[in-house]
Image (cartoon, rainbow, N blue to C red; front, side, top):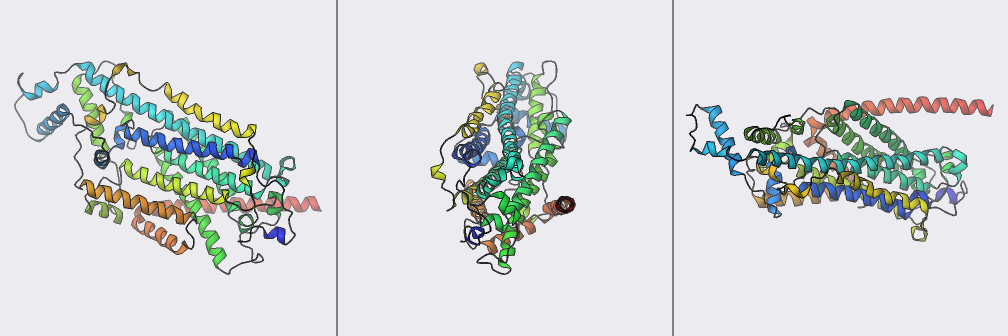
Length: 505
């Protein structure tokens, strides 16, 4: 590999300090990676403790939790009530007598049902506060990292002469990694992240700003100039910027163009498509969020508390999915028709994004021109580490008090959801194979597995075919957005070029 052909050609000078400790030091990298890892751990913990909204648990989730030893007992009273409700809807029946089972269903104290529903909602609110707080922290710390870097790249106080290409690439991949996990965190929040529409649009706007800044940095960092010249200054690299440079040593016709543009397309497509999917749910809070059902102002009766959880259970298994895709027919054939709308599938894809982001980051960290082990700790590396405690402190106020002494999974116990037709062995095999394939696919995407571009292209084609109805509208939106961005970039470049000509003349 030609690490720095601009230095060999004596076009640029090699920097003495390739790694900026305050930008790409161990403290910054460790803090961001730890925040991402803790965010994923919080999501998995909330899933295992039944602290997610009840609409997130599908029959497949219940079966998987039973496989790993977390059994969800059925509440007989709720089953009787749900069965009796169906009987009343289907055929007319005699009114229950005082000694009948129907009457015993509502003979419990009113406070028991109310406390169970309230406690479950408190645990759900606490988990949302924790995960959303960590997600927002990644969003704003990522912007706080990438905006100063762009200012330095633009020549603020001449800092682009000391900022290396290596630091630029590491910061870009840190921000990319953080943005992917931030999008995954929105999965836990059931569409209506906040009650105010202004806050929802503000969150989407900040994410869009971060996305545009990130795409511009990725276009630069994926160029052949930045890929093979990590020890030169950003200023010199930008002056000799080429997406594909036929003059570089080792240039291969068509191969360089295909690899560079394919990598860039994959990196941008992943975050753009995921952003469109998450923001659509963010800006439409009433689409499928059963937690929007508000509790009555007066003390509810036992029937109303049971009806509340029964309605949540009904909505939990009616999440809209595209039944015309090949993938849905495949899961239906295996007896896992709820697998596409289950949170288990979201966790598997989170593993894919985590592997993909971490592999991309590690690929840039391992550079023969950068001696990371020689970096000394500094004050700028300690600040992100201390910020890790903020989401936990904020979420601690939302956790319910232990005085209730109730089971946190009570809201799940009250759901009378039928089990999937697949056996436990089938589900376990599907999860293992699906997760393994996605991990290998992520490593191929990140170019950790060498010479895997044909397989990666086939995997992308297969995904597009199996999800053709789902992704086609996103593809059109993506190309429209790319076209608008390219027009803006061309206009900006022309104005900048004209202004430079006027200054020189």
